[in-house]
Structure formats: structure tokens, C-alpha cells
Image (tube, rainbow, N blue to C red; front, side, top):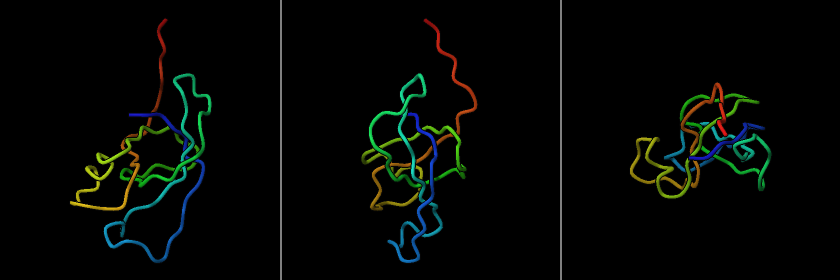
Length: 89
């Protein structure tokens, strides 16, 4: 799992039938210190995350699992909303 911040929403009136009912969010990947890493990506929101929230997301083939469908054109899925991160050194 990875950490990101929701920075936008993608609106698509026509999309793959397996994406119907799911919101697509733009997320900015972060490191454990909540610093931006890499470029923003699109992720299917399976839990109802909102703008500015910290989220956990998964990538690759496993991204389809939380959607409850057999196949979908998905590379990333939001699977949790983060309330707090504690780092211990």
C-alpha cells in the first residue's frame, strides 16, 4: 500500500461499464513524511474519499479486488482514508 493526497476528481460521462458507480480521483503520491513524490495519478475511489484527504492506495492487478468485479481497466484504487500517521525513529 502507498500514501497519497486527493487533489482532484475526474468526471467521465462515458467509461468502461465496470467503472460505473465509481468515482475517479486524482491523487498525489507521498512519502512517509507526507512529501510529494512522482507525478499525480488517477485512482478509482472505492471508499468515498474527498478533496484534501490522505489516503492509502494499491496499484497493479490487485487494484481491481476492492471493486468487486472480475476485470476492469484499473491501475490504482483508493482503499483507505488516513486519519493520522505516527513515525517512530
